[in-house]
Image (cartoon, rainbow, N blue to C red; front, side, top):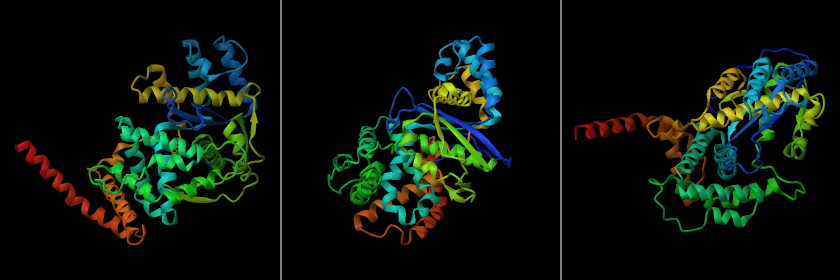
Length: 406
């Protein structure tokens, strides 16, 4: 689920082998409801080791920093450190690519993935094609932002359910209070009804993820998917990637996913969320999980991730200062388009997509109650909703005119 943070074209083909150094900021694992660290960022810097060391040594010398390592969280605390950050960003922006996520909204998007996707997986392209996933994610996030008590409870219980895979948490998430709900005036009720009726498919999906794992499940964590986004980009530019990441518990657990990219030369491309993207990249070996103190390139990635996470969080809170705004200006060209941020136009019923998707939600809830097929005739239903939008919008105009004349 992408936001409009940035829209990068495909990178120019450079070829050869490059080192990519990666680090993240805002990591809270499966807890995406953390109120102190609301933004997650991951940076990947394609830079030679000698160049990275020169940048780090110069920055430490020019800004008279203590120690021999750049640490983003420490630099953020002082004016001198913040100016050092600005220098690093300017030096390495061309070599850096970033993804950022608003974590509470990412949790709302995960809700679609684990609550709706299991029941719709057979022909999910129908629903992704009309932006239904964006509608559900933005609707839940908007309700959470307005302190809707039901939405708050759903988020808490959903987070617990996905972490633990416990059927009791699912029952608490959507208790069976009967089927008499007003779907048209309460879209959250329609979501709850859909989930309650389709809980069997939902439980089966979450059990397949947890299975008999002896290692912790990072089902809600954003690290691995963010790393994939950055490496897909650099994998289009270079023939081979040698990847170094700061030590990370999720990456240690999910390393098998990345091993599958070692020696991949097929350049497989696919449609994802309405755009074509390269899905594979070629690693010379599995990513090295290293101590950042020994790798200047990882330190530079840490500076980028820390600065951008801080700047976006302050911007989201409408309290960014001038230097944080400068950081976003410097890194504007670094942001990929795999970010997860809300776009409330997706649920605006005065807009075509909002109108169409609220009808899709109500139709899915009704078909769930009637135990009808979710896919038969659905493309035609969506086409009819699009066709009816113009007449619906005219009725809105009439209502506004009547209010003004009254």
